[in-house]
Amino acid sequence: MQIFKSKYVYHLCTIFGLIMLESPIILAANRVEPMIFGFPFLISWVLFWWLFCCVVLYIAYRTNWGKNKE
Image (cartoon, rainbow, N blue to C red; front, side, top):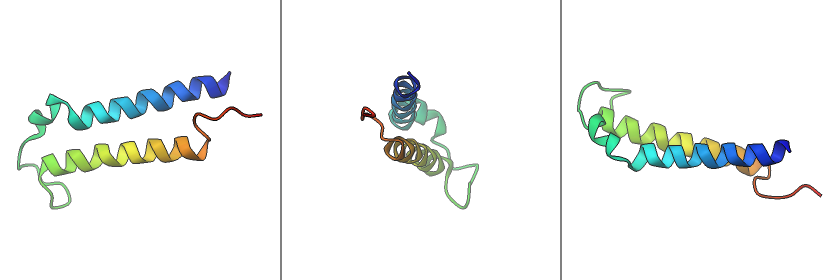
């Protein structure tokens, strides 16, 4: 049952990350200031959500997301 619940968590986190990466909310982040690590805020926003999606998908891969344990 735990595997079944974790699949939904992986799906929801991935979908949430993609929505935050591609949604119109990104227009609110379209600013030059503040600079984060020398990047404009928009680039930092995109890099953060890209990294978030990569981490979620890596964890899902390492835990055999989508495979039934036999």
